[in-house]
Image: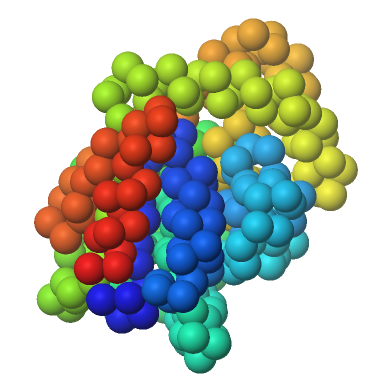
Length: 311
């Protein structure tokens, strides 16, 4: 039913969420006499950061001018961000959208954020500054791979879904284990019963998706990804900053230090992005509410999605 709560549009990186969301918003705007117009709420953990435009595949200013967007460019790269903070801000944005008689289209691939907004968050322990700092110091001295290996020993389920370079989430998972004696993966299954909602997923054949990802990474470098990271370095980016977790930042910093060639850097980022897409798909496949739609080059999936939203 049009206007009955937010709609979720999910899928892996590179699958075409931004283009599909814009096409849907355009369609509903043209048909405004019959359908409630849409506004987009980003559920992407990196698009919140100002200055992290290319590596986060952020919608362009022109695209954002076509339809109102929310939760994009709301933080400096120095500021932390979490699923709990996303939930708070997204709920406020959705309430404002609905007050104006429009409908929220929540678009993103950060599965934990989508789950938090749809179903709520488990009550994790308060952060322990002493434990966290000790783990961060250990990551600095011994490397993130060392911490990831330890996480694999105590919480293999969490280690399997957390990337080896994601120091923030690795540290948080180990912090929860050390302070509670229980794996964070076990606690994160203690959600409330899944709530009814309209949740739509986009998919592509793996070969097609991976080709798109490779092409997107090439386009990022052509658009100035190296220069974007140089600006972050100039801003004093640190290992513990949330923005540091964006795929490509660490790899480009290593390239700037002379640790690997540009070609090898591009290859590594493509590999990391494909692995991330695989983890995203694994996460979303566990949610039975998601109705999956095959992305068509000619945009033929848009009509089917529009009908699902309006049903």
